[in-house]
Amino acid sequence: MKRILITGAAGQIGTELVPALLERYDGATVVATDIKEPTGPLPEGARFERLDCTDAVACERVIQTHGIETIYHLAAILSASGEKAPQKTWHVNMDGTLAILEAARANGSAVFTPSSIAAFGLSTPPDPTPQDTIQRPTTMYGVTKVAGELLCDYYHARFGVDTRGLRYPGLISYVAPPGGGTTDWAVEIFHAALRDGRYTCWLGADTQLDMMYMPDALRAAMELMDAPAEDLVHRNAFNVTAMQLTPERLTAALREHIPSFEIVYEVDPVRQRIAESWPRRLDDTAAREEWGWAPTYDLAALVEDMLARLEERMAAGRGG
Ligand code: NAD
Ligand code: SER
Image (cartoon, rainbow, N blue to C red; front, side, top):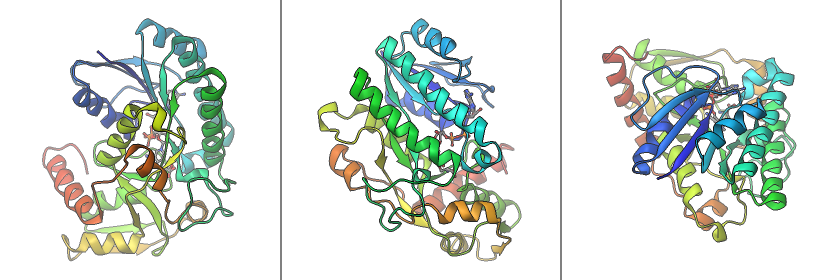
């Protein structure tokens, strides 16, 4: 029986990873931890514990008490929020990752830590961005993502901790709201389209970023953690992607379902600058070759499913 711990479990990814893990691993126990309470009840097999990931002593105690085999370390401050509080972002993202890696080392646990398209910067080749390339990000969030990749590599090479990770693109989902990133517009636009029939977009019409639908993101994390160790060359920072979106491209796909949908632009210079420093398209060949990664949702499938699920939730009074 698997014993799994998630940090940042009340966030956009963690909220959906808890049930996904319980569905994939029959009889698993999931300890969902965060500094804030989950918004809804947890499924059977999961329990909530309050845990600040920067508290190294508490991390080790919780991981030891529950005999945790695998940690999904999701607690972090994301790009746009990070620029409002860079020092705090360094503290949470780096001291938190160090505390989790140390607890994993002491307890023999495996660790999944997500990196991001934010680990790249203006001097990176943007289209396609190779797996191994120059990384000089310009946000504090990006700085912590590169440093986190390196720290996880170090803990594997130096201490033999089974560390693995993905460079996620922007994630689109309907259960929990996104937590202060530069790709949040691609979630907000769905809510606004159904609720108001129009969206005021703070990203430029033609700004292209990599994106992925949440079911693919969850499956990618679990498949990577299940991959045979001997097949992995890159381990901590696999480029993965599913589709490339601009606000105009997503608007056109939304109009296939809601022909009267309108979009207007009021560009936010801070988030626009961040987006322009990120890749336009990741090359995910290494993930495909080393552990068989392949996305299942393209733009049309994403839009159809997002609208249907959001409509159901709105009808049930659970979103909008
Ligand atoms: P989120 O902001 O929705 O959730 C993060 C969670 O961490 C929140 O619930 C927050 O309460 C918690 N948290 C903050 N400080 C904490 C602390 N000190 N101790 C414990 N918990 C704390 O973020 P998310 O979108 O779920 O992202 C999870 C991970 O995936 C992050 O590492 C992020 O960088 C990465 N990622 C996310 C995306 C995306 O589009 N969502 C893309 C690339 C990478
Ligand atoms: N979605 C994240 C952000 O915008 C990317 O890591 O911050």
